[in-house]
Amino acid sequence: MHLHFVYLLALLLLAATVHAAALQQRTLGRVAEIVLLYLLVGYCGIPMLAVSVWVLVSPERAAAGFGFGAARPLLDFFGWAYLGMSLLSLLALRYRGAFLVAPVVVWTVYLGGATLVHLQESHGRALEIFTSHGLIAVLLVGASIACGAWRVRT
Image 1: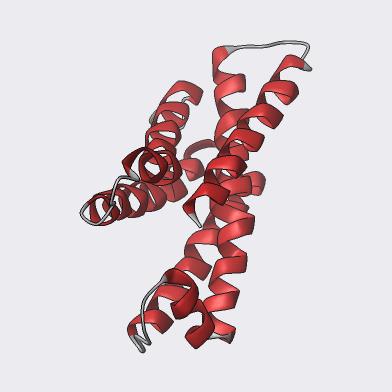
Image 2: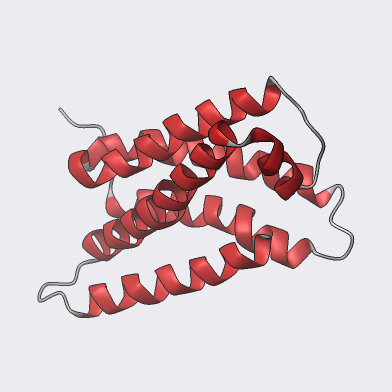
């Protein structure tokens, strides 16, 4: 399942590159914001919204898909949390600026922690796991810093 997200990441980075290349005025801040928005909406937003709906509508099938048995109500909590996190990411398209810090923090903490959890049971899949989880966290933080989302607004 993680490999699908690696392909998604590659596709999103390609799309962000094409988008950035089409800009008339390319600045580091603008290109970084484009990359950040592609990651937030295309990786953390739309697909994770679908995951949250799957978990909430069909928790038994979702649990089997994730490779563990029924874990309710924990899986239900996960579904609701994912729903909120994905909606926060989608709102980044509308609000931008300092608002971008919120979904970056939420997803960086989650994906960083998920990387550590998965690596404990990686069974030779460390690169795939890092690419589908940890690298996203690194890219989110790096792009948010480069676009200036963390600057204090007065």
